[in-house]
Length: 149
Image (tube, rainbow, N blue to C red):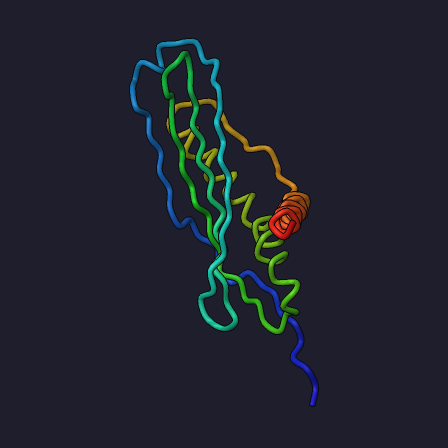
């Protein structure tokens, strides 16, 4: 009897949540020298035995001359087929591989919202999710070791 072949595929990509807010029009009368606060996170949820929903969320708040210029909040999600994959590979797939696929779509959605809000283009800097995943794993291992000490 042969083992099932591992399968990994993006089956659907979609914008799960999107919000854009400009709290006050006074921002348009000031020189544009923004300070950006960017918060990015990802999550994964099992949908059924072979599918996961992976979400990549970013909240960007732009402040200009002491006022909030805009807040953009986008969650980009995808449904991924993950079948017959080794259990130890699953955290990497859900925490790095899938977010790498979703990021360009998230980046485009943020830029579209910002430019439609009459602000200059905002292209999020590419992220190395592989390196971030590895750093998170090392932090978790260090915390576990400290917890045992």
